[in-house]
Length: 226
Image: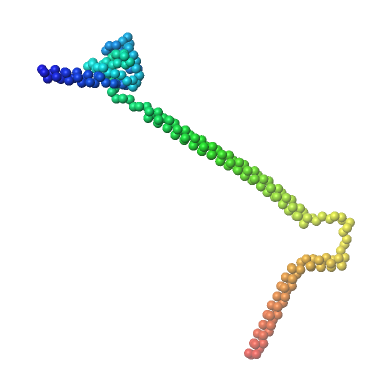
């Protein structure tokens, strides 16, 4: 019997020890009631938010805790409370600015790269336009040169096929003297061809003489042998 009372006393002592501690609300809109009843909203004393610290005075076996907040006492479900302190938001507040600073830095670098690429693109477009203009000019110059060359070639062919006569009355029949002088002029003009022809004739003559001498020598030798 004494052991039973000792067990009950130990449980009550442990409940008292757990009860007299600081606890925190787990969820938003945690309700503190005037009695241990969750049937309606008539016994609602106060609504607290998440991580709201409360002073727990005692715990009831029915699953309710008697808490105190700013001089106001009431009941709240024990499952809505935790003895673990919430994580401080200082680290989060420090991390958020750091993350924002990193994002801003990356965004600034990205903007700089975009601006640099845009400038390079503009320079390339300008160079492309300049090259296209130069190519068009070269094509026009080439076309004009071809046209001039064709005109000159056509004019040359026309002069060769049908020479122009300034005045038909100035034509005088060539006399023998004039024909001779004309021939000499052509001779002076074509002296290279004439020299080549003379050289060929000399070579042929020398070769003929050589062959005749060789044949004569052969005939003499043949007679002497007989």
